Length: 296
Image 1 (tube, one colour):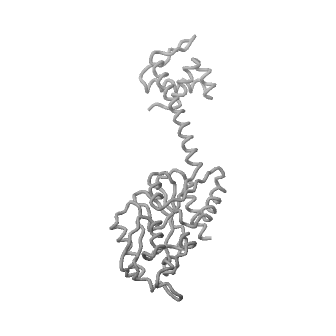
Image 2: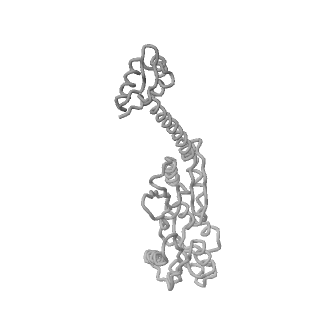
Image 3: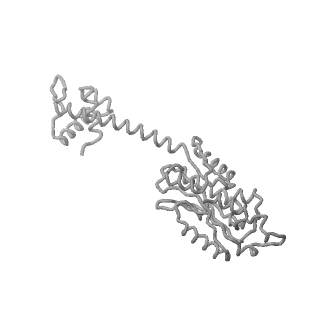
């Protein structure tokens, strides 16, 4: 097995052609340098130097291996520089994506401030996206971590998750719905058409099954299940009075639209997701701070 120190001694001796000078540059004794060179010659099977009382010179084998090890040394340092540059970029930035209609900007800001207190040089990139785009960018590794509802969890192996918080579920109803009146409760809308947003990379039958499951959990018996291509379309259909929609109080549409909100008595989990093989330790640290933000 060729020893790294032997190679370094060899290359240094190639430049100096002096065991004494090589020993000084390597911070070794002359005897140690001689032993390393002898061991390298034994491992390779060729004499690398001609040694006389008057001079040291490279043999043909020495010239060949000097060219080989010199190329390796250059490639090693080039690779080391490239790797350092790569990880410098990886460790210096964290890219977070979350649903564009979630009201969680203050929580994300607080978590990032906590992360930055231990890593002052880190840079934060936050992006709002529709549900389908959020998952797409995450699976393409263009986002380090995403925040979305457990219901919309990205599918695949090697994905880690952490619960961020629980938020109350509400039934959203158009104010023009004839059942809307003073004293009305969610019970008055259990048979209304039920609108469900499709999740990315799932079939309509899978979305419909998810809708039926939620209806069973809530005790709804809708006259019809309406599948919208995405959450934005689902909100629009609800505003147009085509049916009712179950959402959460973290939604800007729930908070700021004219839709009427009725508590359904259940909660939904907001979770963050990242890839298990993510090399930036700041990603998992950010998830931990985000979780702690809602525990305090």
